Length: 287
Image (tube, rainbow, N blue to C red; front, side, top):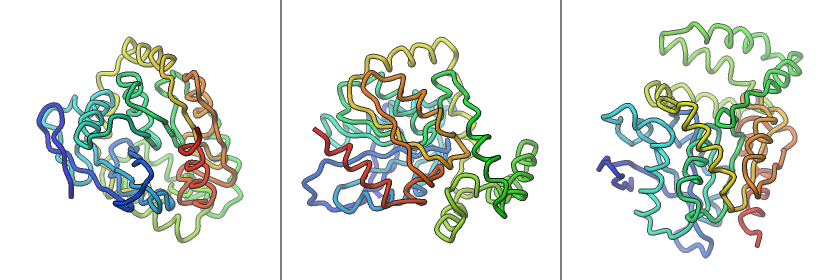
């Protein structure tokens, strides 16, 4: 597995999917969670068919070792790891895709290194960085109470708030997982079954550590100076982050648009790869 050395000499790992001889520029892809192995991104619904995808495992996830200093798990520090990866790959400028909490890393990177980004794709982002916590995810969840999985998922959500045992947490995550998908068929079940083992509790806990109100406000202000085109993809069945969060995130950039997908949850490439892939590729190809 390829690796690179970052600013504090830590050796972090990444995967490369797709053709070596593609004429298209690579797409760097950040996982969310926070603290989840990038393996859950898969090939992003076939995006690797025509271009290379670069998928780094952030500190303490996948093949990358735990951080010696817990402060290195905070998302502004993860943005510095991304810059080290860019330099390692020899990319003067590049397109970046980030899912879920990875969007916070991507936004911090955009503020720190705006000249390095050609395009930015944010998939189902939350809006904590924007200081907004919309409640439409709960509305989406409630609207699906007629589905057979709903009572068990609802009970699991309540129990998760108090669960401490890791094995119990993993069981509850799977019970609650249907709320994250547009439907609960075999591909969704198989994808959800990987979540428990892929989450790193320590990287997850450290993601927002040290990010005080002053730093949050500074990052938010910096987004208004990011000039690269931005695409925010949302799903109308996303009961994890909802859709309004994506609208808040898009409003933080001078050149951003939101593309909602119908019948799609928090993992659009799992629910509707035939919808998700073309939307992303069209944006990346746009002049």
